[in-house]
Image (cartoon, rainbow, N blue to C red; front, side, top):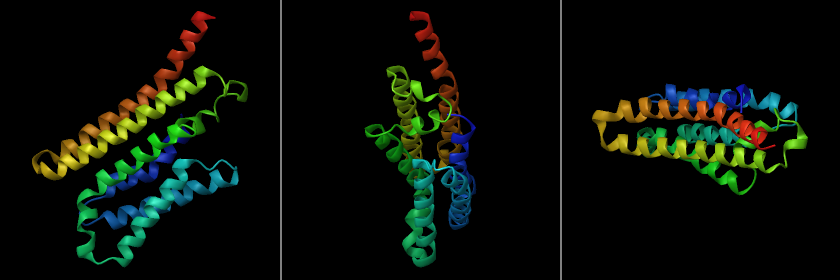
Length: 187
């Protein structure tokens, strides 16, 4: 997973940064716009990824909810938007382990096809996908806790999730090289 994977997270990052009790509709609209813009080149190349589709569907649903539901019906969404968005990502990423691991879609763009069926390639992508899924699950749980511990909400909604996500990116950069080195060492 490289720069293209990071681009896939841009709509989510926009949502997390802009989102607040009175701004989540703008955050959802901006995230939807970014998701659609990022989907266009993926679609033209015939390489639409799971994250692209989930991003468009999730943020479109939020925009529709914001347009058609009464303000009183949306209070829960305002309060739990961070937890919900992280939870959706966790479910999608962890669910992808049953089919094609989330990270494998990105890895196939960087790794020659002859390596795709190798056990090491599969193991690396299952491990990376699990790390990302657990990272998003942890962020969702932190977002839920933040709603009940207002004094620590900055730490729980921003600081710790940012550290976890940076850690997941660093692990994603490190782990494939580690596996490659161990395979070369045993060959």
